[in-house]
Amino acid sequence: MMSTIKEVKQEIVEDPKNWIIHFMDFVDDFRYYKDLSFVSKPFDFDNERIDALLTATIEYLCDELGLEPPEWVEEAPSCKYPWFVSGMENLKAIAIVESPLRFRMRKIFTLGNFLSRT
Image 1 (cartoon, helix red, strand yellow):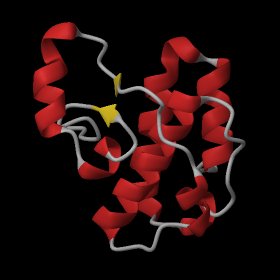
Image 2 (cartoon, helix red, strand yellow):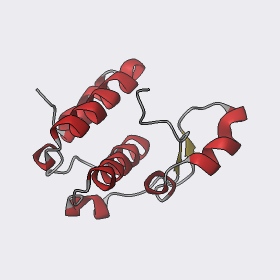
Image 3 (cartoon, helix red, strand yellow):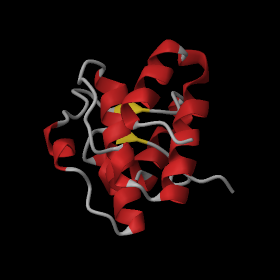
């Protein structure tokens, strides 16, 4: 059963070592079910990076699937400072170029294949 975005955020916060597992499980499930009810209710905006990452992901996936993102995502803040998710200095230049628009708009920089499983 798919977790709501609020539940996913809680899982990420409670298990930061394995955040990518919880995150990618959500990505896979949302792509499979295409069910906006799992993102219809906002989470509390109290963790700048995670909040921006989850919001950008929702926007990106909605664009990809041809769905209208929930209105609440417009209220979600961006990161105050750029966040390079990989944390690797030598990947920063590539991440600036490859990062999808929805992530760049929230000052999050990832490689182009960040949401891919292939």
